[in-house]
Image 1: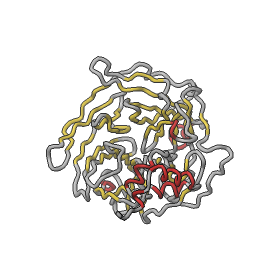
Image 2 (image 1 turned 30 degrees about the horizontal axis):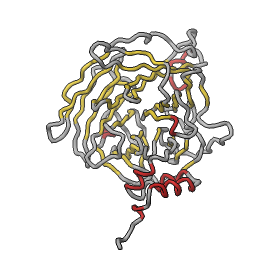
Image 3 (image 1 turned 135 degrees about the vertical axis):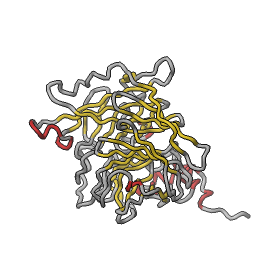
Image 4 (image 1 turned 90 degrees about the vertical axis):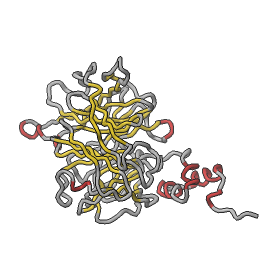
Length: 372
């Protein structure tokens, strides 16, 4: 008789075990046992998590705080699906899955741009071509923004890559995203670019940056929640959603007057609008959309769309946002959920959920999606 292992546990029994686990942390850990358990457990969805400054994780929207082993002496500067993008004090970088502890080493991207100890003045946004688990030779693209005045796109391929291909944009990119196998960049003046790469060489290289969209209806309009009597600021994101590439505009306004109104740290989010990129030769422009087709968007240093029906407590046609600018020790400062149908903003956590009490830490808030 053949010897059976835990990986041979039938999927229906595995789901029963998952449903009996009261702790979200235990349901996440179960997926790290082996590949069959991870694959079979994906039909039992997990809620997204928000990283907290002290290195713990907050479940949205039920507010459960999860404590998982995380590398010491490193700062979380973003995420890619179920992996954290960590940067060490010497500029060394890695993608680390805090649940399985799988690590993918990256070049010292912390030395690109301006970087001095943990006084980070550059913002890093990593993206990968596929939402599947990272493999040792995964392609990783990184957008590096320096004080919003310039940007650099870096392409690297682990393991432990010793160099990288990069290209400076003639104007800053706000965000990058893979869509239909190609890397796209959202530029200034309503432009969308394709970043062409050469895959034939030993290491992928950036060969050109082409503008494919520079026009759209409604881009000068403002959401009703944005006061026309006050100065507003914007922050923009690119998100792939059900075969569409979406441009999400986030609007800020401040109740302060005078000099303080110039600084984003004194502003609060007051509204959003969303545009779809028309990719065909005849459309080539931005088109405003009024719903997300039942999806929910999570925007920040890592943006992603999720089918709301598969996630308990996550509402459809809503945009979940966090404070991904001007770091603060309060992870829920200027964070919430924007309902595209009503134009209303509500807190990330239910009123019945206690806000976690934090004691120090220097991680930036970012979304992480356990094994989605």
